[in-house]
Image 1: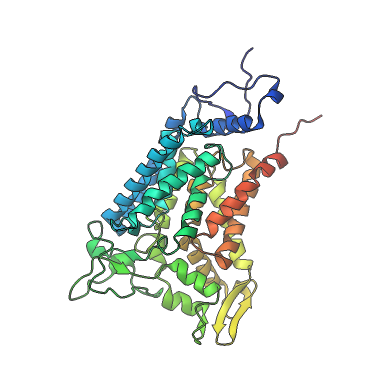
Image 2: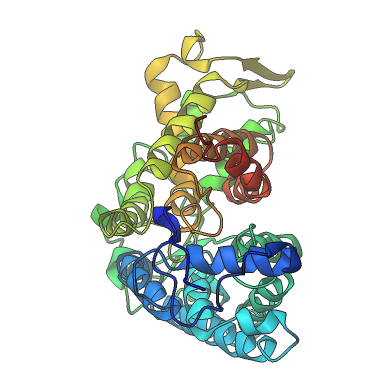
Length: 422
């Protein structure tokens, strides 16, 4: 029997290592195997490529974000990546030996997923005393989740579940707090903040990282600062005004948050591969250029996120009597359009939303197969990420949004399935 043609562009280029397509009596094929076959087809988007080649096409996209991470977090960032990726591959090969599910796990899959996981980890975990074990265990958790999901064809992205699980188990360790100053970039020790480095949180009007003047006296190799994600969630949860002081949104941006340039380019604590929004976008544009992801995902995801931040109920002023809330903050007399836009920009680059939209949402096994469904898919991620960042967590909101939207992706495929005209 001849092999049937596959008209859908997304199903072309099935690797030669894939099992044969199911026969005409597809009812005899278990549903689990059918789902796996569909996931394996989606993993090979380019004609004639194997899964290893497909993942190799993605690798250049992470060079710039990881390079920026090594600049601002030093050699410990490189060690953290090496430990996470190595443990992911080794544990993946072990889980490959377990049952029928394991044979869908390959070294190239674990290499790529391990890199994504490493980019969302703090470089401070590369500590030989105790925290390095979290990096090593992260690879084991990732491999176990991938096995439980039935291989790479599972709908929910395994990196998202792994990061959420690690953040729930180790919330303190998974929060980055240090960054190297420009005088010790690359070669500095991220954990060497002696002598008693003060909190380096600076207001929005402060000097950006790359123009920070060198102070007199002993120079610490690393600086401690409160992440912008923590500052933002403390404000929206009304935790920042519980000491009896009045704090407005303008004061938050002017006096507590770092310069926006530090979040956009370089110089602020964050995940070692997602601390620079510009580097993440540059790597994501490479994926768009190589047609590995749909450009509509980041575009409409950001549109949905900004629309949510502009319309959602936000605290605009924290007083000793409680917060003052306002819907559509851009229309509030306490805020206004420019300030609301600046706040939304901080929310966008202060969390991993851009990383999620470029590197995770575009995964062939996570996004909808129907092109028309991707617009709604991206908008839902952006809208839910905005809600979660305001009410739950800035650093985990996009990941929670991604996990929930992934669960309804099959419904989007059903809703936008091709229909025959009769």
